[in-house]
Length: 279
Image (tube, rainbow, N blue to C red; front, side, top):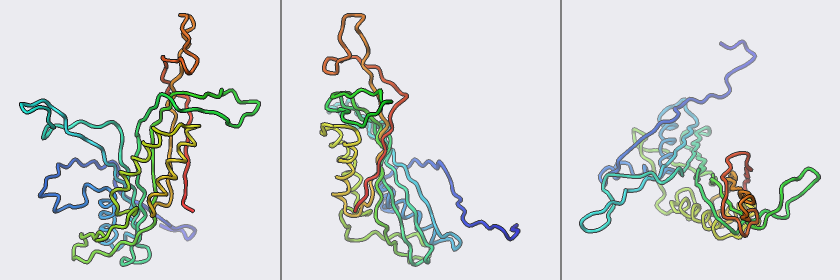
């Protein structure tokens, strides 16, 4: 009950941690053509919610896609992929967050889409440095010209807002995907594949002056090659590997060129984040 001094200006209600496991067969794919493309699936669901219910003006949908592969097994004809046994490919997730906005009318739907990946663990054993950073009287960190570089990559990229046609069927369940797909747009399924590839290629091949410099190169590539991506954000926590002092054994292990034994350190660690935007 309002006392005249306040009112509920916004409210959101929904579900959290809704997990779905679905075995997709050829005949079922024809009925749900968007289920394996998380951007389109989230847009489809959000569009249905704001179109079906008069009191809902915005829908927020978050999707995580987990990679699974068929387990390779031996057979009479040699190695083969098992038809119904799978293995989870690490902790990496494909992430999509969608907002479908009907504030300007149910026939004027605007969608915002942010996609990317998380928990992509990578490591390189050389060609990574940390040199030339700003120092003051409190700085204790030593410069190093070669080190192990490891991080768990979180990547997100935001597309330009996209207009969504109003469903025309009675149950407002149909969802129209453009016939002609604009390269680099939210409808282009190669964006996610290429963003991941550019991230890994740059991480592996860049003779890194710092993780910050490598991050900037990765983000610039994604923006340059995808015309409808407006911003690219990375979060790169350092996974430190510290050389072990083995001097008591007469073994030199603290010089980077000779170090072979390292201790993984979970904390404390650096956290490098940045967003690169299109001009």
